[in-house]
Length: 83
Image (cartoon, rainbow, N blue to C red; front, side):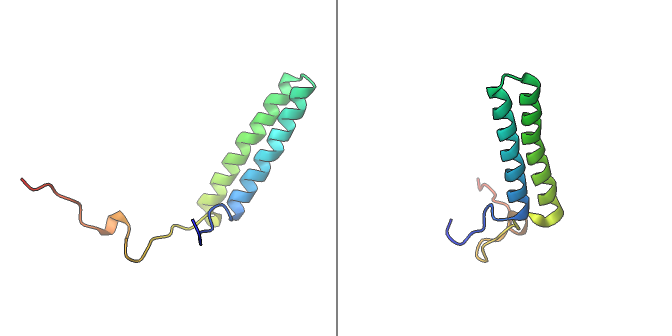
């Protein structure tokens, strides 16, 4: 994937950082044997995915890229079977 910017967006970075913090919290509470703290950490992990998704929908994610010789399917004629 040379030349792409996959994952190099504010939405991706924010989602991953929040999820990483959640994993750290969950693992810390797993070591000290606190189930409530573990599940709070797992909730933070899910929050990271939600925040990243919302930011992506707000336009802070990766923009769709279409090759000039291969337009999106909506602009092409559908294939038909000949009988």
